[in-house]
Image 1 (cartoon, rainbow, N blue to C red):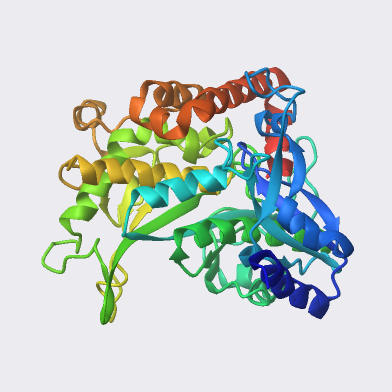
Image 2: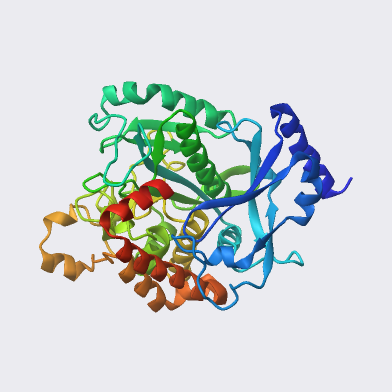
Length: 456
């Protein structure tokens, strides 16, 4: 039995169990939008091997879905959507439909430099024998109807962690938990958040590639289920003026396998005051050194910078600290009973307009640069940076880009990040983001908010 045949049969068993007729081949574009094509059950086997054709220019589309005139991304040229059978799910909100996440490959089967999922794989390869464990922590705004120009009608206006917020959204949230768990996706924590209609549901951490895959499924199912129930879920950083921002915080730790023993969390050191190892500090040092340019990948929309502001607990300051929710990098308190295992770092300066494969891959590359070059992050900031004077913040170097334009310029100045993006994406990605900046300026504020609230 061939490998393709064996993998097809495993998927086919799930397809038959759920009565699926149409299988979507999905990928995430450079704007963090989930796109795809679909094949019928009858022709799935051959398409799992050959893939489905896709014009290269689709990876050069901006927010307004218009392809950009970047060399290599015009009317000529095609790649293939090749699915990973391990990612198959039956879409709980779309009976009869299933989906798999895809790599974008060249016609001869070789990897393509504009494939975001391949970019994350390259970052994981750069970590060598060390395994990156990660989880995304997305917030979303639940509305009782689709957003309209100048109007966002949220399901409730309860307070942060308010029990009435649980009650208001209970019917939808329970269905969402069941839908995710029904696909083998482990939900760990849920609560109503600070903003009106804002909710947060956190999945269990896992290997980095799976964590990125699950972040895609969480967004797809959260939005799809809401729509099927006559609601609307938006992950936009700021879906309407005055709303509390939706983040997508990224948690990471790094592990080493030890034959005959439990794996070791190399970020953990019980002798340190906050429990971090030297490796963890260097990883943080790499993130902070590259953070201005990283923001173009982790907070990659014009709308991101409505959220990424001081006082929003969004990580708008270039520093780190234990349980410092204004710092870009937070060091969470460890959990009793699993002190070493629960040691991790959290990048707060991240939201759901990011492509999770690009964001996570870039953060890993930055952290590995910190480890390789033993970058010192300096002392942690144990106070609220908003309580410092402008001069004190300047002296500590806490400033970060305050617009997407500034973040893209910082990315283009960061030789290391530009190198890891590769010769193709280093041209393509900034061009897409610059086009988005121009498009948003032309559309005006009300339409811009609506665009993000409906796209994401």
